[in-house]
Image 1 (cartoon, rainbow, N blue to C red):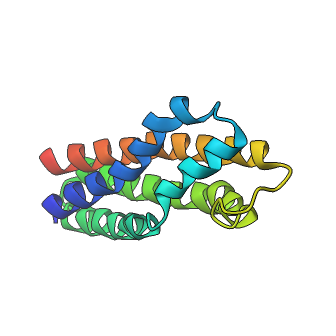
Image 2 (cartoon, rainbow, N blue to C red; image 1 turned 180 degrees about the horizontal axis):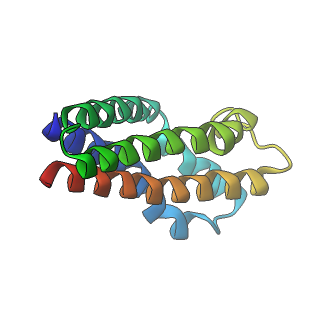
Length: 141
């Protein structure tokens, strides 16, 4: 269970880290270029399925580590951070996706939606990284 918690949480970090690293190169693109670049994410929804799996793996890890209170609590923290990631996605990222029909429609407020989308992904990268750190720490104790 420890191995699964670390591996699945680490795999769930890949997409959010990619979003964070590309932010500075994309945030200033003109509208036409930005909407073209956004199409590289077509089909990335599938990696989002790793987040519920990471949540479950960390809950399972917490149960497995219940005899070690510190490790159990850190595993719970990892699961809570993954849950926070999903909440941020639902409150900020998904509404931007919906308003732009996954960046195929260019509404007038596209710049505000771009900021919302980009920064929600950046915050989620940090949240996901903390979850990964918690999963690793809980598992090596």
